[in-house]
Length: 100
Image 1 (cartoon, rainbow, N blue to C red):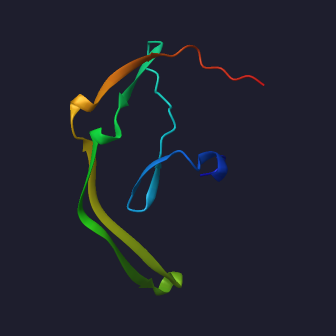
Image 2 (image 1 turned 180 degrees about the vertical axis):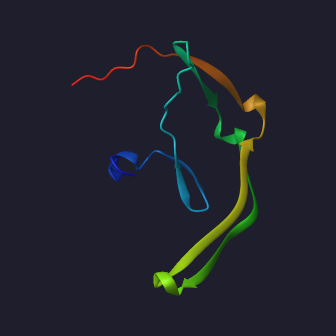
Image 3 (image 1 turned 120 degrees about the vertical axis):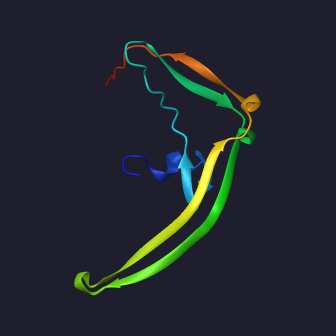
């Protein structure tokens, strides 16, 4: 992740999917024409992860490129398990600005 040092992000990984860390950054998209946006407040228990196919690795030699392709395939789904564990939250978003 360019521009974000590992020391800053070390404690912000929320979960891992197939060995890939998922980062929660807190950015909320502004709704066009309004000064607000929707986020959510939820328990970690609200999310469900189901894996239909464990990660599989295949290697294929490509002589024209003088290399080997590595293909990793997995089939999984992540979704909200129970609406009772969370709720939408509308946030007021003012004019976006930066300062020096």
